[in-house]
Structure formats: C-alpha cells, structure tokens
Length: 442
Image 1 (cartoon, helix red, strand yellow):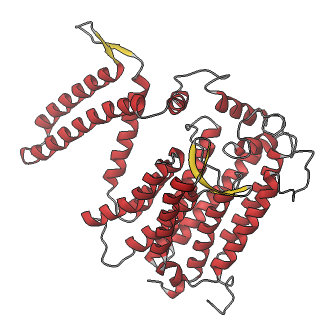
Image 2: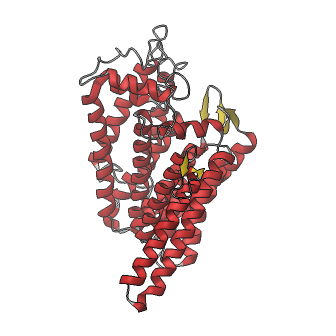
C-alpha cells in the first residue's frame, strides 16, 4: 500500500469526465425507469435505486484501486485473468439463466455478470504479455498466445450464449494493430466484412447469367463475378507486372480468390445453419432486407421514432412520451436503448453533447496511452479505449438503425451493476497506472 496521497497525480480531466458521464447516466436511468409510485432515488426495488448502489460500489472500488501500487496491478494481471476464466466456467455450471443465456450469478435481487469483467482480465493479461521485453508480435508463438488470451474467454461467453459480448472482443484488434500487427490483416478484415455483407444481401436473390440465360442463386452469381474479376486481374498481372514479380502477384491473387470463395459460401452456411432465427432477422433488418416496423423491426423502428421526436432541443427532462417506463414504446429503454430516452428529452443538442463527451473521453485515453513510459500501461490504455469505443459505436448504432441489435450497454449510461463496475474499474486502473508514469513501470 502507498502512504502518499493516492489522488495527487491522477489525471483530473479523465476523472472529471468520467464523473460527469456517470452522473448524467444515472439521471437518464432515473427518467427512463421512473415510477410515480416509487419516486425516491433510494428506493432499492427500482432500477434507479439499485443503480445508486452500483455507482457507490464502483466508486468504492475505484478508491481502493487508487491505493494500490501500479506494480501490484501488473504483477497479478495473470491471476486476475485466471479468476475471470474460473468465473466464466462456474457461471455455465451454477449460474442463473436470464433471457435464454446462462450468464449471471444471482445475489438476492441483484446479479453479477462475469462476462463484463472478462474484458478487464483480457486487457490486463494482454498488457502484461505484450509488454514483456523479449516478446515480438512478429513471432508466430506470440500471435498464438495472444489469440488464446482473447479467444478462450470469448469461447466460454459464446457457450452461455452471449454473442453480443463476444463481438466486443473484436475491439482488441485495434490494440494489436498499435502493437505491431500488420496493417494487411486489417485490410483483410475489411475485405471479409464487405464480402460477407454482399453475400448476405444477395442470399435471397437470383441472378440471370448473360448469354446463357440461366438463373442462379445470388451468392453463386457473386462467385461468378469474383471469378471474372480474378481472371481480369490475372491478365493485368501478365501484361503489366515484371516477370520477376509475377509469381508472387499470382500467388497472392490465387489466395485472395479462394479466400473469397470460402467467405461467400461460409457466410451463407453460417447464416442458415449456425445463426438463430432472431439473429437472422436482426441482420436482415440492418441490411434493409426486412421492412416490418410493427413486427421484426419493432425495436429499431420504435427507437428511431423516439430519437426523432426529440427534435433539436428535446421535450425536457422527465417529459419523454415514448422512451419511458410508463409508455413502454421503446423496449429496454433503460438498458440497450438508453440513448433513446436521452435523445427524446434533450434532442439533437443533448445527443451531440453526449457524443462529444465520449469523443473527449476516448481522445484523452489515447493521449494518456501515448505519453506512457511503461509499455504495460500504454497497451492497457489502448485496451480501455478500444472497449469503450466499440461499446459506444455499436450501442448508438443500434439505436439509430446502423448496427444490428446485439444487446451491449452504453458505457456509464445503461442500467446494470456489472457494466458500470467493469467500466469504472477500467477507468480507475488506468488512472492509477498513469499516475505512476514517471516511475517508468516495467
């Protein structure tokens, strides 16, 4: 334990921004879940009463973290990862099932979701592993261990099943890129994404082949188009690439072509044989293949209606008529779609203010990351920024119809004890590690 003042050197900008967002988030939850029969903020039978407890616990944990030594955090990073992995296994055995997922430990009226804390464990383990002096990301062994650190908890969470939280683990790719992963892998990832979307959009369509006049399924037609493109590129290689570079160029083309075929057929197979019906519908809605505002697209349609009704300046605090508990127009208005309540009450101006707060928070974390002398702290800071960015981007995207509804919270705003504690721990760990940056932790 430290004997000096634990808050003397912490980054006040990050701390104040965090406190502002938590405060706004709480009052937003109070408005969205308000019950006139239980108006007290300290009615612990209501969501807003429980959230006060969770915020208090989060601040208490934050204070305890500030009392730790930075070296203590680094030293026991693998142990925290191990405890997190144990809890993910345990919840599959003795956890409570809610909404079809066995992802909770029940504690009276409260519940703890280990998958939210898994992001902390992975962040700490990655930071410790990749900051080891002899580690080089170019080595195959390093890449394998990195994939295991991320993939093992993701696989356990997928067994719950909680696909939304698993998708959040994609955010660690940005951290790996900063630490030396080839940019070609990011380009390949973008290529896979674009090709998968095209395959999904064409899956129910048919395409008539010219000259032959035969109709084929949309994804088959896409494969034919890719084949034609590959042949044209091959001709260009033979015409314009010098002989000494042709072999390599042709090899890359062949690998890209066969990868494309695997992606197209793999996406089609996964959609029809792996995904559940509600997941298929969410993807079709996002891609505009389903227009059913009163049925399958109910959530997004009601969400966008609430956001649009706020106009420029909103209807005023506690005056929402769509995104509130009484109206029940927007499903999950205090959790997954909390952004709707905020937008309806404070309009575009309020929504923009929250977006700016998130941007400032993320930029500050990146600035903190880049000023570190300790590789461990730098990597951990990038993990924090990646997780927060992914949650923010996807949650707001869900609310405005630009992302599928995968059920992940908006950091510091959505109701939930596990999420507010996990996000708070990430922030306070970073504050503590950054406060000791001049000590050059190794």
